[in-house]
Amino acid sequence: MKKLLVAVALLTASYYLPACKSGPKDADIKTEVEAALATEPGYAGVSVAVAEGVVTVNGEVADPGSKSGLQSRVESVKGVKSVKDNTSVAAPPPPAEPVIAADDPLTKGVNDAIKDYPGVTATVNDGVISLSGEIKSADWKKLKKSLDGLRPKKTDPTGLKIK
Amino acid sequence: MALQDKYRELLDAAKTAGVSNFQVIEKEGVLYVDGEAPSGAVKDQLWSIYDKIDPNFLAGDVVMNVNVAAAAPGTKAKVTTEKSNLNIRKGPGTDQPLIGKAAHHSIVTLISKTNDQWWLVRTDKGEEGYAYAEYLTPEA
Image (cartoon, rainbow over all chains, first blue to last red):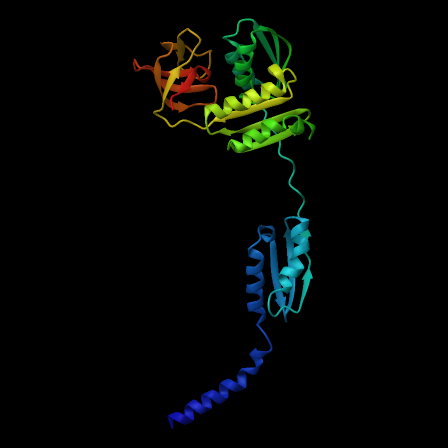
């Protein structure tokens, strides 16, 4: 009786199996494609949808290089019939801006810095430190280091006489 | 990019010497060089290369803000004034009242770095206050 049950079970199983043989399921393909894209940070902004082996990729890729490599990367996944690439390329990030101190803290810092150099006067305007007066070359080299550390837009020594 | 070419030697030296958080921005005729040098010697080396390319920094086309990586609290620092004593103040600024002095070439203990200009220190007499960082040289 047991043998019969096993035979029936096997028969039933073999009846349903062929349906799976047509290839990986869409859900499996989706997982595989997502894994293939996860290795590249440029694909962090994309989403994947699969319908009957047809993969649709939406969202934003980081740069043109990521876009051109997308098709072949997705196609290399087993079971993918075709790829619909709906992604767009993200705008490049704006160039980095220098950090410039506001005039008030900058003026305070400049006054602290020039205090020990009595021949030197300084004005601060819109982030630019303009120096005038007289200073020894060795002292100027020290002073310039202090002034640049205050994050000015520019340290302008054109009015300064360096001896 | 012209300034980056002019100061190529400086920028290459900074990278080679292992300056961390290194950032170079060129904007409106000024090259902004930022980073943290692994030692005071590296900072001095960068400033001497800068001085070589633009003697006395007359062109004013670089703002270099490369600091030495923060010394740990408790580090000893030597008062490296020219010959005078170093003022210890109640707050970080020359407008702050004086609370004491650290003798020329004496050793103080670094409590914290308030900013790149002012450090909170304790003198060998136990006075605590702010001193101008330019005149303090951390002991290795």
